[in-house]
Length: 173
Image 1: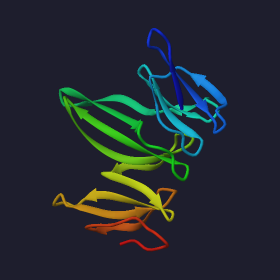
Image 2: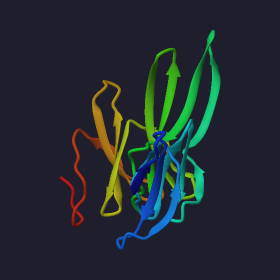
Image 3: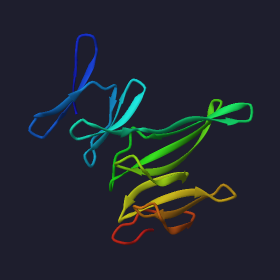
């Protein structure tokens, strides 16, 4: 991205190629970097994913609803992290469960169409390596446990390890 700012402080983001040619220009409040032809952008209260042509692909807020909880409400929203990026056609999604001023969160993955391929049930989803992503959950005693999922979201190695690393050349330590 290249950025220009006018006298009033309005920013304009320009997607440029390696020769400095402007591919498209748009006014955003925030932008992420491009990965696999997609970027997360923000304008006002709106967050969405754009493609390399600057076209909106899908909203970054996949679910935004309030559900009753006792005498109050919980805001249940899934937001694509603005700091994340696509890897192997997938991007990390976080689901926040708000009650008052505190929240808990779980992570999952969605594809380039905005469809969840891994439900938000994990404490953390790590980047893919050798076709598998490390996932973290907690044991009944609150201890972290690690397993691995494939690109379709299938748990291929059960969450059973106290510590786990990324795969490299078919092995993980």
